[in-house]
Amino acid sequence: MTRKITNRPEQDLQIMCVNYFRLQHKDKLIFAVPNSAKRGAIEGARMKAMGTLKGCADVVILSFPGKATFIEMKSGKGKQQPSQMAFQDAVEKLGFTYYICDSFDRFKKIVGAI
Image 1 (tube, rainbow, N blue to C red):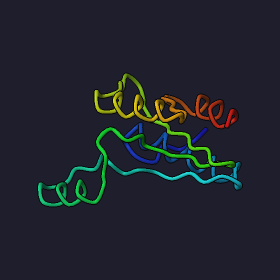
Image 2 (cartoon, rainbow, N blue to C red):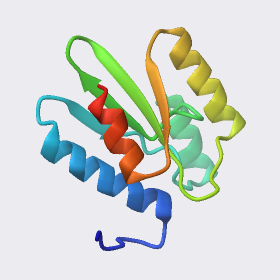
Image 3 (tube, one colour):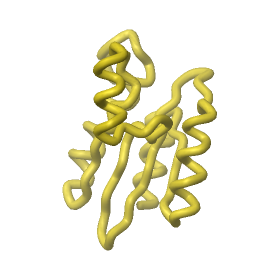
Image 4 (cartoon, rainbow, N blue to C red):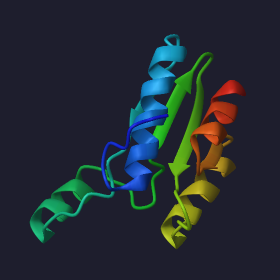
């Protein structure tokens, strides 16, 4: 049984998945895209100017040869926002893989296929 890390289920799921991945898949790279943090107007404008993209997936996995997989974490009744759907569409049109992950078991199946 995994101990709950925060009172934020999507963050808990992402932490558990990233930790698992880094232990099991040392030949691949996983990283988070921290888009969802609340920011003030000035910092938000700065982040947007720096390239932050609304709707970007929570996690990106890079693997050989030149493969990228995008994963959006959702928990409970969480649903994709329109900006996330648009990002998924853009990523898939470019030939990349995009998944919605709602459980640790689902994550293990996703990364098993990478």
